[in-house]
Length: 113
Image 1 (spheres, rainbow, N blue to C red):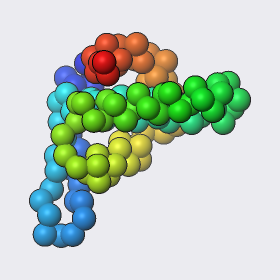
Image 2: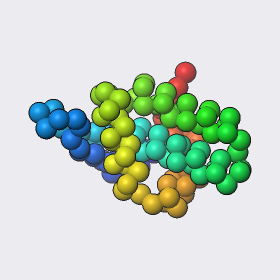
Image 3: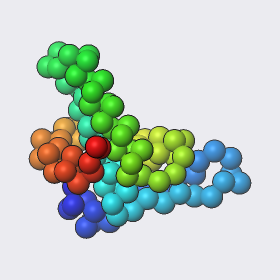
Image 4: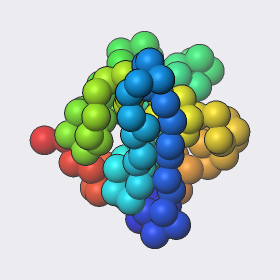
């Protein structure tokens, strides 16, 4: 995921009412968002294809939450909105390929314990 950090993946979006300020994620936080999205989407896809159990999917989703808690600033609403931006910018095949190439590196870059 360092490659996407180097590429400066920046996400800007409005959260809540228009009076609230824009939240921009870049660098390490943007990479953590991309990592979280990759893990979450892959977990859902694998469970949907019956390649992992519902319990294994929940473990992967739990890892996603911990990465967001520990490596991304902002409110949960802001993080959720940012995850939607990341999700919408990439196709499912691109995200699954991201997982295949970067999952181990992602977990090393964004430890959860």
